[in-house]
Image (cartoon, rainbow, N blue to C red; front, side, top):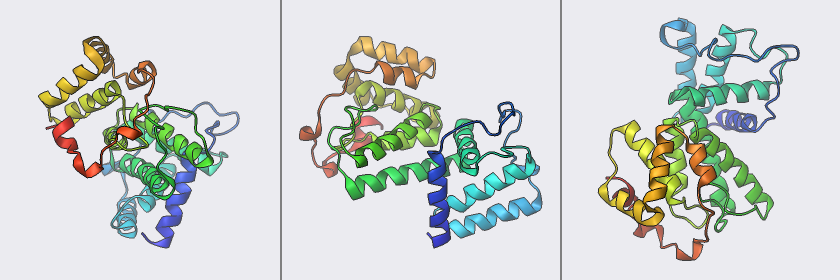
Length: 262
């Protein structure tokens, strides 16, 4: 990544955690439904060129400059958006909107930006034993854990929209490590959702593992929540996390595709 792209990525990441106050004083809440992101034929030829140039700037990651350019295009189409508001607040609300919108190139970039930040802190400062089972397992014990917990909370927020990019990224976080291991009911909801989104059914082995781990009654509850698209409800009612780091086997011994999905 170029120095410029790295700087853009840092500014975008900072915006994700800005205080989301009102976009402007004395202005009603902005409706992204009434002011959707322009795509395709709604873009001027010059705008399409700018987006292609941003792709080239970011290659091979294609994220930071692309997001900044897509945001600039949005503001060009809706000049009243965020008039007088801090740039980081406006950018944060736009990025959150892109994720809520569903899986798209911009949302994939937002989620990727967040996932890279999580991976970096795990690599640089981790592990943080028994911290996250789909929700916090304990109170953060250090500044690094507080930082990671904020990142995980943001990824959880995005996964709760059921954006496919976010669901996939959230699942990757839940693979057995010293820091993270999802409760089976949370893992099941996410895998069930991704199976529907990708058209790849859950394996019989996976269902057997889930039933054995959480019981038929909880499985029935999670299925009902799945019907309501209610990941938040599953997380809130999931059992308390239990310690697991002393049980973890070397990661190379795991075959996640065989265990969870076929």
